[in-house]
Image: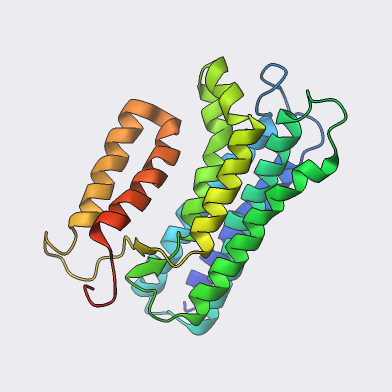
Length: 248
């Protein structure tokens, strides 16, 4: 029974591997949207990363349910997150840059390498988290799953949006800016709220309840575009409430 949470963590890793396989599919599985748009592999990869995030959330819940938290489980969780929310999103950015730069004849492959900054930042973030025992009810820097899911939403946004949104999402300048901002936020020491509940009073959880409200309203009105909007709101709400170990 004690290994059940670890099996959930490994399932997170499996979904991450499936996402990478789908994203790096050399040919479209079924279709391509226009000359510049997400392939089915990209969409499928995003779906697998969504499943990885769900499993990643559940493994902690299952560990507490079976009272099976362990140092081994913590290490497995970070290693799985490095693949699912570091390497896989990096591959999404790589393919999106490849597509966005395809129209620019003579563009060197070197222009695709910035996509690998995201996996490096994710691994750095996870290593720092493992060494810092203060990060339980708040974080230093954006959590890797939040960053990875934001990037994973891009193919879905392009697929479900207008041609103008599709072009914007695949614009290399937008992608490079995304890489720099998200990577920088991951490795920063910016205090970020955690969605874990320590107390059950309204005052103690105002920031979390506000984030839930923003996420629900954004999902209703903006659909997939809600993901990066909620990411931005997450940073802003954290800056407003300024979580720190004294307050929690």
